[in-house]
Image (tube, rainbow, N blue to C red; front, side, top):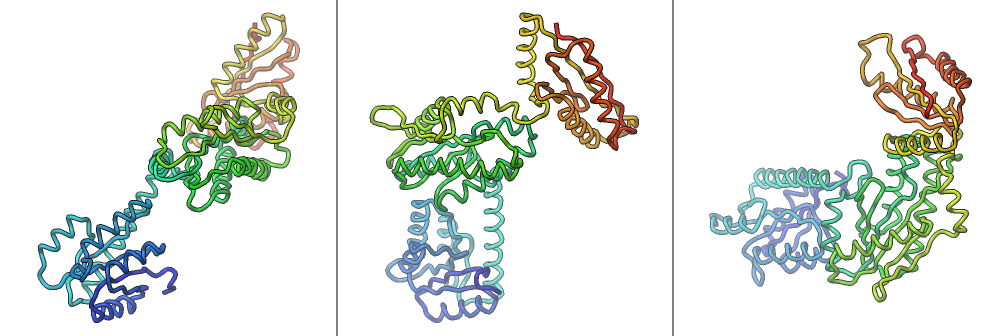
Length: 448
């Protein structure tokens, strides 16, 4: 077995003979073994950064017995917020009172000396298997399924603890204009952007920094021992550059959405309260959002103002891009139901006030075979939605309503032109492989 993948067992016993016997049994069965002769030696070993899979700890030892060693080990692990290494106590003969105390402390099991190889191996494997299952369940419960980062509950708990015990910087990272990705390219593309950005975060920060996803397109990070505002601003600039490159890779080189990130930050001191630090970082984030996005704002504690740094772009130029970004593709704009309703009400007011012309059209996909599966009807409907979006003008607006329907608003379309628009959609549908299986029905009505 490769030593890099073998289970690593540390054996602690003041008797050299017991160490040799245990080492011989374990190494013959493919395990990596480290032998230590005292409790202090174990504590020093762990503090050097060593993380074995399991510890076999003798109870009766001079200077520091197994129970005291165990308690100090757990105190150290808790103090630096690392997972506990499972411990099996080693006992000599019939020491039931020791077993009761060990179980009370939290030991995983006991093995009696002299060692019976089959018993020793069986109990070690049981503990290792149990520990792996528990850790797997723990990771799954604390991880955001899409991105692999810590989820909201877990990351809040981690940062709440570490921010109180360490100096550092708290960052709230919010993606700018991400909703347009879902609106224009669909939620699958949006998920791919989120996954790509999560990978960027993992590589951009240090291995001991804490990163999590706390909302749809909102993330949080705590950078231990970070106190340099200029570094934080460079971090934000790097995230913006890398996200833009990733978006081009996912969405195509013609992607013109001003996708980026706004970062609200605060530099904290040991003893900080997480909820208060979060509010201040959030205030900094709001300042970035109100000043052109794509930048970093660091909360300055002394006078309660924010220090804003953003991407190097003229303000009016940036706002032009943001305000015009909904027409970045030469196709009809797909909106969510809520946004569609807002636009619909606005167009109604506009039509009435300026005596303009506009139409709304409801398209329904009707299958010839009533037994068609829902998943197939959904796929075909989405396919029709693509045809609709590419056939209509970029000034037209559409919404996916029921499972097999799209509602469309056609501004500046006169009575004599509406049928031409509809016929163009139907002609495009006739050229597809689904034409013989589905009928497109429609209802049109002028907006008044």
